[in-house]
Length: 303
Image (cartoon, rainbow, N blue to C red; front, top):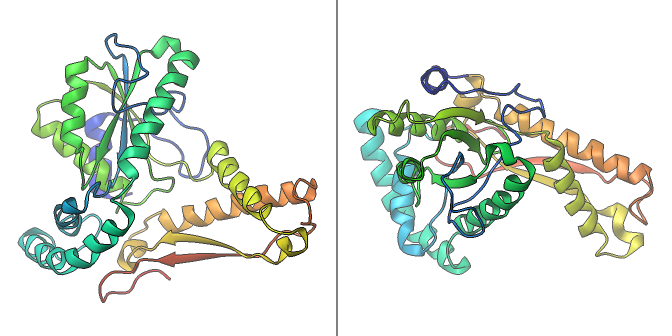
């Protein structure tokens, strides 16, 4: 755990879980919304801050997105301070045309749309499942795109939120992703003079949570069933995860070990389905491999 993250937790008074446990403090108040559709219009009692990197919803947002990303020394260390600002500006400027074209091809990043959709649906469930902490509302807080953290906090204050749950949308912990979002939350609370505005809880990772593992294994089984029975055992599962710089790993970052824990738990669960005969044509568990991708720059990355 980095010093900055420890400072963040002390400042917020946040609760946290064991690194590889599927037991979470506040997990029952798990996630909720971005717009008021489908939710109670009463004063919000519990707000869930859904933290993620975000992405350019339209191609024009690509440049600002990349600039914020490369100027964040938590995710990519380019020297920090003024050097980080200048190099981040230069690298983002060079990469913007290529990345913009890629976002144009897919019609912009869908992450905001799906985050808001998940929030609305979770809001409906939580209000029924946990009436004692209702009404619930989720607030999207993206690190490098709209809506930013400060916008979510301002809306929470306006809504009269009492209890806030900082909910990382990254299943595995890393100081480059979850840590960066936590640090930004801490900075914005200080800047906006809102340190005592809410009572905080934290969900900072969920690498082997039963719901997550079951969702992944279900998709794997569904996909195999699209193919002929005689070919199903021949497929190899590739678990592809974003890599991190070796200097991050050497500092003790948990990300790689938690990704491996996810893969191990998924295959353990999938093997159980195979043994139970739940996947016709598959009598022996498929082979699999864990792969890392998206290296940036000249420095060594985990691979």
